[in-house]
Image 1 (spheres, protein in one colour):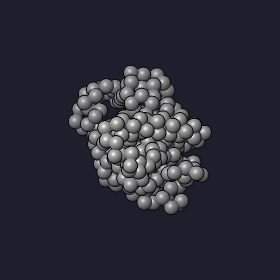
Image 2 (cartoon, protein in one colour):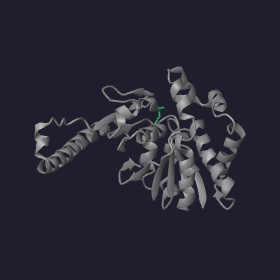
Image 3 (spheres, helix red, strand yellow):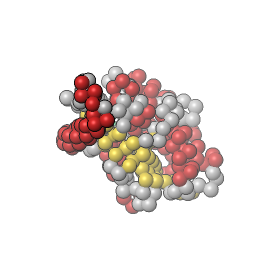
Image 4 (cartoon, protein in one colour):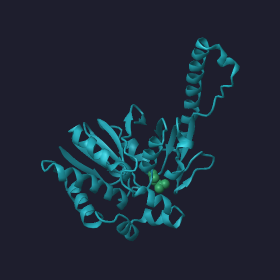
Length: 268
Ligand code: MLT
């Protein structure tokens, strides 16, 4: 198995991904949001790159899901006519979610704080998500043979999956505004360090080797310290009132699931 790393969504090349397993990371906060949402019962994430596309997608999906639901209800009524006498509210099956500059987009249902994605809010929903870097990294990684979503929240499940997949891997860090971001790099390094610890035959690209050692040197004991000192997106979120998100996103293995791209959508 070989492991390579792309340091930002802007820098990932299609040739790096062809025939490989893409592991997309946006610790702060898009892939942490996806892990939390699916862990708390959301049905599907539809990730799109622009706000306009998110708005088009929600109209299309709402129509489709309402039609499907009505067909299901009609079928049930044939089996149990008393259902007609009961109220069957056609609720909203979709939520529009995402951020620009870290904040919820006007008139969207949810922002990009994983703490908003509680079971009460997301259970059974299809969530259309657009973020500045994370959803772009997912879009650019769709040419890979397979695509999975990683964060600290599901890091062990991700490592187990990679071990079993026995495929060449490209870890795609979303980065921040086209540039390297230390939060994603440390998560990539942690994944690589864990994989190499159990399999000495894995071959690492220069960047994969550097990420593994960066994690071991800087952060194997405490993730917050190096991020506080050097991660601009960490300090940006801290200054703007999202400290609780930072604590949440840096905890390991609290959502032990594997979000995966199926067709155009991310599901379990
Ligand atoms: C992104 O995709 O750019 C990030 O998730 C930004 C954020 O922290 O909201």
